[in-house]
Amino acid sequence: MTTIDFPKTLKWGAATASYQIEGAANEDGRSPSIWDTFSHAPGNVKNGDHGDEACNSYHLYKEDVKHLKNLGVDLYRFSISWPRVMPEGRGELNPKGVAYYQNLIDELIENGIEPMITLYHWDLPQVLQDKGGWENRDTIDAFNEYAVAMFKEFGDKVSKWITINEPWCASFLSNYLGIHAPGKTDLQAGVDVAHHLMVAHGRAVQSFRELLPNGEIGYAPNTGWLEPFSNKQEDIDACKRGMMWQKEWFMDPVFKGSYPEELITIFEDHNAKLKLEDGDLELISQPIDFMGINYYTGGLGRYKEGEGLFEVEEVPLDYRKTDIGWPIYSDGFYNVLTDLHETYGDVPIYITENGACYNHEVEDGRVHDKERTDYLKQHLTALHRAIKSGVPIKGYIVWSLLDNFEWAFGYEKRFGIIHVNYRTFERTPKDSYYWYRQTITNGWFEI
Image (tube, rainbow, N blue to C red; front, side, top):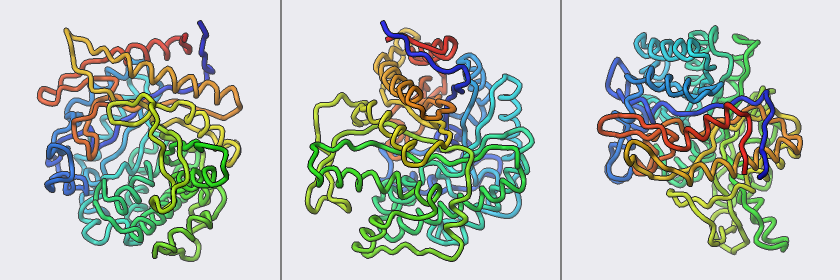
């Protein structure tokens, strides 16, 4: 047996997102988001699912906090629903929406759990989408107005903040590949949204420094890892290009003050232009306190002429996969973390999402999800290796506390360490929950 042990200073946590768990979509003054619109349009989400009720956490948040306390976590990462607190996208706050988050924050603090707030986990108010959404630079101003209001409302109790979750998903997956809301398939729109999200991030960081100088703020890009199929230079270069639009495109502007020229050229070759305005890069590249990293999967890649924007194909090898079809590649997690450290230096890192989809149901009052526990063991072992390699990891936050609305997959895919019955909203902690609790309590596990 080998013991995998962690520093006593490592923060442990669990994460959720507002549209995925809250429900109460039409209650207490909340206005529609782009995900309400997208999910209610036929054909966009599996089985016609939507987040109208989700996990009903809007009404059951106290029960969820009890589960968090029992789990023993230090942190709970959750997101604020912009249309719940600011129904017109800017301007007046909705007192009932604000009160919900005040009550949640108070409940967490009373139970010894530190809140970590994500400002944007994709639920843009539909009223702003109607004016062009993130393609419209005015949305940057609206986001800053919203961020400032949240800093003022909750900053006396909350010190850890994340501006944007997975900007690649909110831009390219949503506006070029068309898989997430608003469902566009326009590369220029994807490039515009990506840049505007990063400028919005910078504006929010600037406002945060003025209002909450003692707090910590970062953002949470998603990363995968493509290992070259061979040592041929064409395979190595193809994998770099394939990762670049998730990694360097969203990290170079923050940490180097520039976008990767190779990607700018590729986009231009496909008739999409990066539209920089004076001061944009200075705004984006302000120092942040930490980087959040969301990691789930990776695999092998190789050059293939004409394959997508970047002429890279993923090689379908016989890796074990989770129930969402993603290969399990924990070595990629280690590679991502060490690569980020080598590329961007000693930037503190929180793992803001890591977890696995397995669709086990309740049997005799228990959920036996050994596969999820195995996934967590593998990835926490990779995390341990990264820490031993000198990567400054501050915390690990599992995705997700609850089974929830899994975006375009609806309720078909379960990522939670707690099972949710979507008819009764009954919560049942899974075996992985109890394993994670033991690991947090001990600060180690054995393999």
